[in-house]
Figure (cartoon, rainbow, N blue to C red):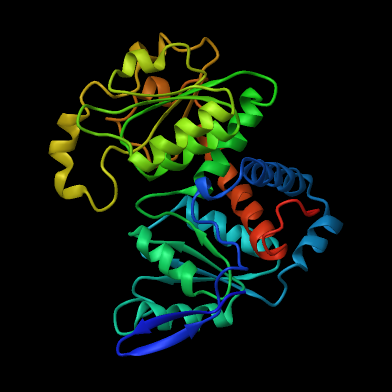
Length: 340
């Protein structure tokens, strides 16, 4: 563990919380094998949870018995809150929800001070925040693992869940697959594209003209595509991107905090709704995915409620993704290859 010095106000403060703690900030921070281990761990805990084996439940419940898991959420949530609280309870931990009106995060107390205080009393912090800088500051100053439960740049728990869902439905280990994203260049695809490429899945991303993926994401995606013998394409042609796709994915066109620009964004996204026309050129066995909540401008009812849609199985898998993150980052202190 290294000691670093930072300035708070007019004072220099030594901090020693850093390098030995593994945090889950984004999928690109992980090696391919580390990410695969997270997906496999999620798959393992799904089997355990579904087994209803009382002895196994009691064994897992002891791992965090008497401990607290903090949930610092500055953005509202359904799936993230339920899954993280459920995962904490599964391991015997007490989830403590801390909404934006519950604590003084950056309001009447510095971000640094709050991070030091909260992390001294809990075993882990799930943080669902607005800015990526908030996640970085938490990770820099926390004495316990920080799990990014969403920020404006990344959504790693969703990526773990999504790859587990693809593994279950289409078996990426034994089949060559293509995943196509149609929609915005946002936090979900930033992690999802990297996650898929780490597993050898071809990725096509179709965004409207004028909307581009971050340069950092494109650069990493190209490196992974070359290394793992798969293809990465970024385009503005949604129909071409969907050709022969095994997985079609979209997300909200108007993210939380962008409601003021809704009318302009919906005009910009004309032609990017996933509908029967786009699905007609996909692979016959294609699956449709969406991280939810869904809006009609993103996908038609015909597709969303079709037999090809796996959105509700995908949503359930958020629970097992959270379990995997807690087990590896908290219970096993960042040892990805430990026994569950």
